[in-house]
Image (cartoon, rainbow, N blue to C red; front, side, top):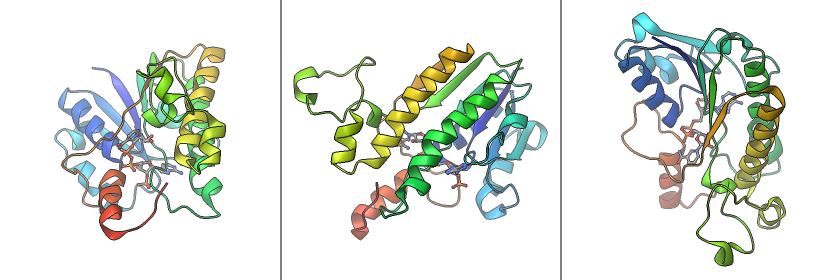
Length: 215
Ligand SMILES: NC(=O)c1ccc[n+]([C@@H]2O[C@H](COP(=O)([O-])OP(=O)(O)OC[C@H]3O[C@@H](n4cnc5c(N)ncnc54)[C@H](OP(=O)(O)O)[C@@H]3O)[C@@H](O)[C@H]2O)c1
């Protein structure tokens, strides 16, 4: 069976990817920021096949080369790790924009050093497609459309801004380095939690109820 790396294993989408890959009999490495945080990563060890075929590795989007070891020797990488829901304040560049953009490039640079790697699947977002002044005129939107970074800036849409730039830069780096890249652009992914702690989409729903603002 194949070997896969899923970045950000504590995340909602990543956890389902890890679960499915293990169920299909594959060997899985997943990266988290703190493998020793039992509260956060403990549920991953309880997945079927985890004890035999799962490896949890430490990696941080903001540390250059952090993903080198995790992607070395694997057949495929699912890059899902990204800040999603952070409070909108003066730290937005450090908490959201830089980890999203530089983190994606960091992971792809690690991928470009892996001789075994066949494909990278990047979880971008519909936010990198739909924010533009002419959205009414050009709809329905498809993979040729991009959000306009200037529109995002004008409207404080920093998550959309970061995801748009991150995806564009990812395509560029993949092309330059001969990486077979596939990008998916989901809208709102929510369902039963695998993790014990609520992940971003559930927190987003809660924030509506609690009257908090997130970007
Ligand atoms: N869920 C959706 O509706 C949706 C829709 C469109 C696109 N997406 C995209 O799909 C991907 C996964 O989304 P999700 O909802 O599953 O996310 P999530 O549940 O919020 O999980 C995000 C993951 O990213 C990790 N992360 C954040 N900052 C990091 C850093 N600096 N270094 C390493 N890891 C870091 C988090 O780790 P910690 O546990 O350490 O914080 C967590 O594991 C994201 O790229 C998101 O933009 C999601």
